[in-house]
Length: 96
Image: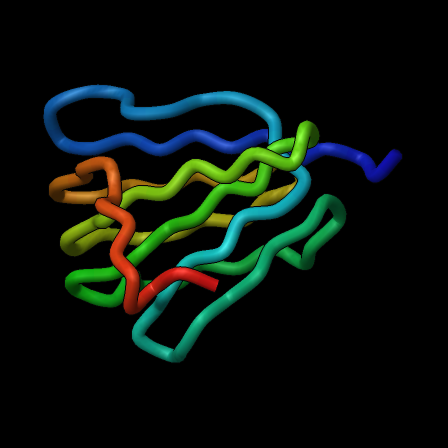
């Protein structure tokens, strides 16, 4: 089993999601970024609007649409600080 990553998503209004995940994928102004446990520290600006996907240990995926904000990767995990954050709506165009 892969080591898990601590993930926290916080919007201006409240904490949106917090837990452990195998991987986090976020769209930044530099492109899409995947983060696994042990990733090098970094600070990135989120694309506006952007998508954040969290892959859980049980195979489930949680997705959010964020507007503005930053992604911070540290040795403790990943924190997303967003101006606004809503659950993403799945569409046929985005289905894999």
